[in-house]
Length: 60
Image 1 (cartoon, rainbow, N blue to C red):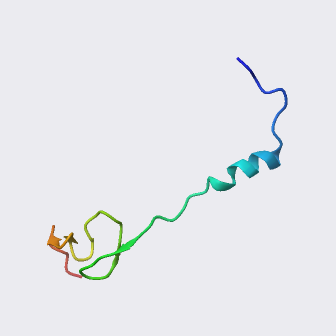
Image 2: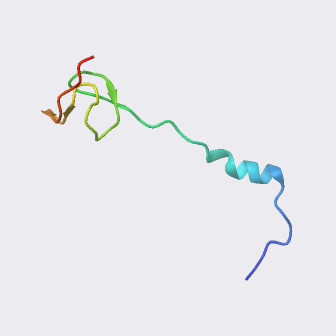
Image 3: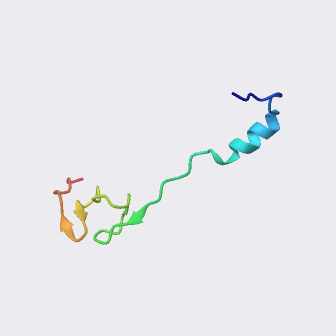
């Protein structure tokens, strides 16, 4: 089993890990109430998904 002969420098390690950070999730607009929601999920504000009411929205 081959093993590395020398250790990687901190700069080389940091350069490789530069793209590993978390990215913000994408949000889409609810066609019913125009609030931001996660895609492919029922809207938590109005309870609609694909032009159908899935659950009754809570009163605020």
